Amino acid sequence: EAGVTQFPSHSVIEKGQTVTLRCDPISGHDNLYWYRRVMGKEIKFLLHFVKESKQDESGMPNNRFLAERTGGTYSTLKVQPAELEDSGVYFCASSALTSGFYNEQFFGPGTRLTVL
Amino acid sequence: AQSVTQPDIHITVSEGASLELRCNYSYGATPYLFWYVQSPGQGLQLLLKYFSGDTLVQGIKGFEAEFKRSQSSFNLRKPSVHWSDAAEYFCAVGANAGKSTFGDGTTLTVKP
Image (tube, rainbow over all chains, first blue to last red; front, side):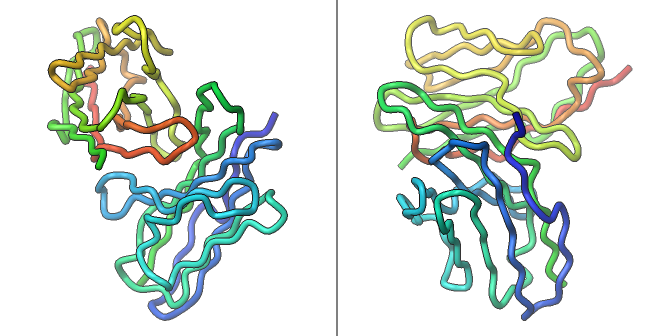
């Protein structure tokens, strides 16, 4: 079974441009999470989808970031317009939705975003 | 609010030597605790996790971690390090089906 996949693996854009990151979770996983690691610091939570609904978006830094999960399958994270401080590695994770049991988060390889 | 501290940014050990990576956490309830490893160009791989029960947890690749509630710690250990263990290690705390909070990471270098 395929793991969590992310596209692209790397993206280099100029300040002010728009970038869209994509995450394909493990098939059947209703939970989908976005995290990012900026400048070698800690990996920070951005938001959490349950199916197509945003369960928790408390980590979204500002309104330049827009996450969607239409149909409850793959998700996109758009940054518009990108700023220099948005550079970092963006991770996606997914987990099953089973009440009463721990549901491990499986992480993708990340997308490395560089804003020049 | 939950938080995680990894006091050591970088650790160097000789191959075959023992390893201990430190992790301290802050969490309002009984935490779920995790250790992840990230090798260059790879995603985060779960090494081990603690929910409840036995405070000594065994993981993959010969790693283990001990939960000490009194010290709010969850240190990762390995008795004999291999060169392939060189990577970055992250401690995390979280709730089931909720967000995880990560430490800053510890980079492990293994000397031949």
